[in-house]
Image (cartoon, rainbow, N blue to C red; front, side):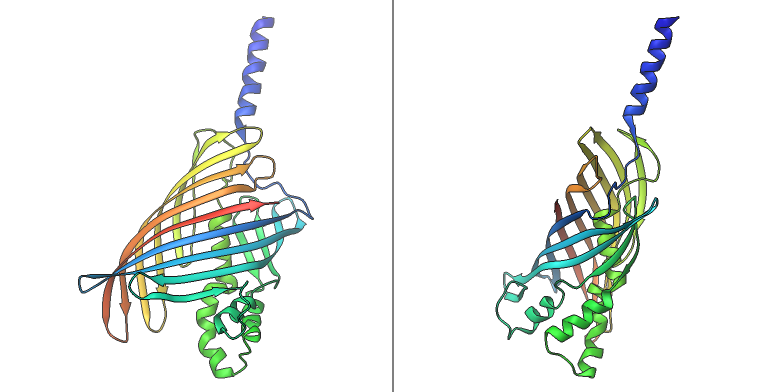
Length: 291
């Protein structure tokens, strides 16, 4: 009988160890920095001739936990660096903006510099789902101020495009892409779960816990995706797939590295010319975190 009890207790302990509540476990005052690198390869079919655009983005963001409850974390985020290079094999360099540049005559550089060190407040659930982002309007106002743009008509004409990149809603969707991958329930290795996020890139994700130890969490994901951009001149509608691999710290829940690769294709409508252009975008985004 004693042996049966011992085996039963060992079985219980084994089950408890194999299952875990995956979530962020952070404390007020915790600080970390996220380095993001994104590469896009865009191919557009112009009457049978491929036009290729390469986008290369580098971003550095600093986060600090300023409040913690049983359900949520409140984080203060600020950009520390942004660099964006747009080029084409046939057209050459189309745009090159870098907050580390000393060229104050470049308007794009100065717009980007206006994003630095402006606090944005993020409320995030312990699963990584973003509940709210505030402060995007301050970012945009500071961009105009940094570039010396004070003409109301120019601000009004440009504000909408900037909100699609740096407004509170856009930032919320962007942050969720790198944070929201934990399930609501306890899981063990091999279990799967789903979630979704929306925005200019929307995804229906299927996640799987590939590995779990005292120090690390390994998660993989596949997703059906949609990319869309709609403004007065351009309507882009693409669909495709995305794969994600995540290596995270099992104590804090913070990722060490997230790699996202995706491929989307569809059409881009240039309304002024009434031209529809077949479009394909291949992308790789890497997020790395440091304390």
